[in-house]
Image (cartoon, rainbow, N blue to C red):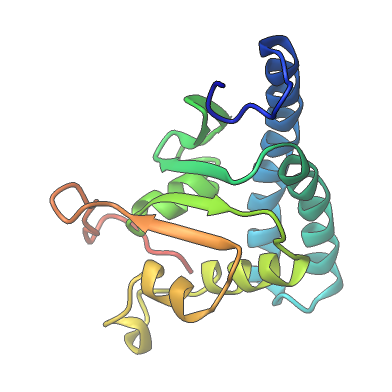
Length: 173
């Protein structure tokens, strides 16, 4: 049975399920960028941020119902799933992939059973400005671990490959 295939599922059915999940996930990743922006601007309890979180949660949950775990890879070009760039990112439109990559996260896996509250917890950590003195001894990976998100798992870049922050690279605010 191919990896990710369900019992009694043909290759065509698997491909259709993955295509549907890709659509949901691409929408979720783009909406997570907006939810993170709103959370940073207004705080996560603000109605604008709550609406953006709801907009992201629906497609993320839809993708999780089709494929689990959802393991995405962070890159400067964007978020990658199954070798496919979901939403391109650049300096003018940074998003989840670029933020995670710059902060040393290689992959994030969303597992079945994830709740909206865990998504809010994830965004709560992502909105932190790691350049502030109170976080100088923390990494994004350690803060995500401390947040105790049971259905969200991260893997940092190996030390030899980890992106390094330079003075010219802005940190998450």
